[in-house]
Amino acid sequence: MVGSEDTVNARDPIDARGDAITGMESVAGTWLIVGHGSVGFVLSERILAAGGSVLVRDDAPRIPPSRHERVTRVGAQEHISASHVAMCVPSSVTPNAAVYVRTHVDGRPTILDWASAPPSTKIATAAPDADDWIDVALLDSLDRVVDHPLLAISGIRSEAAATALRGLGFAVDVAGGAVGQAAAVKLTRSLFMKPLEGLVMEFRANAEVLDPSGVAWRSIQQNLGGVFADFADVLVTSDVTHVARRTPELRHAISYATDLECASRVADAAAQVLARLAQHWTETGVDAERTVDDILSAARPAFQQ
Image (cartoon, rainbow, N blue to C red; front, top):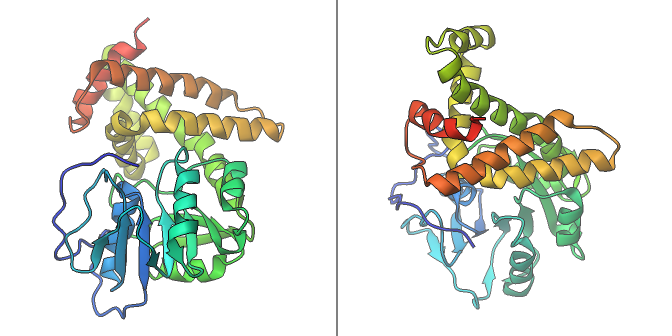
């Protein structure tokens, strides 16, 4: 389902919100996490911090699950019960994850689909039991500490799902009562955020040659403020790991806009930039743990004429 990273020792749960959770009554219930990458990890830690229990279904987790006593790994053939199911897998494998949930999870849990996918895909995945399905769109980067990451959700049981997610420290906006509406929010946001990533990467890599003094970038930082400057660094450091995923996500967003007769010419150009970066990182095998300056220097050949 997903690859693995270094083990995180969470016998004492990490508070992924960035602030301490103390004295909170256990309102989280039992959650099944299908796919334990960055989203599954953050969600698991928040459930543990809220006093809940976590079941993990992932044969090759990118981030190994906590060894906490309230975390249990489950096998492919095990039948389980849970109050909530979070499908934290790429959209390419969401249909298989949905089949697993329908055939191995007893009762009628609330099913939260966290995949980045077009509305039509979310709708098809949810059918025929869309009453239990919640479309979740993550609208914050998990590559930095955010106290209350913003989610957009949609579906018939959205209000109940919003209560559960807020209890885990998320900020939640209900985008509507139908699966697919949250996905539309995510795609619309992508038309801005992913071209911004392409612009930041291209400009900063080229600026090392065009303006060795760095004054141009310092001026931009001063004009746009410290929050933007910090986030621009996050875009650089996360590009190596995530640009291969973000490129098709941007193309999904462009297709969504085109279907509604909205031109996205800047996004079209950015998709080419991100695709070139994805190819460049694959060819060069650059270590994602390098500094911002090292990554920008390594990216420079992708923008040479």
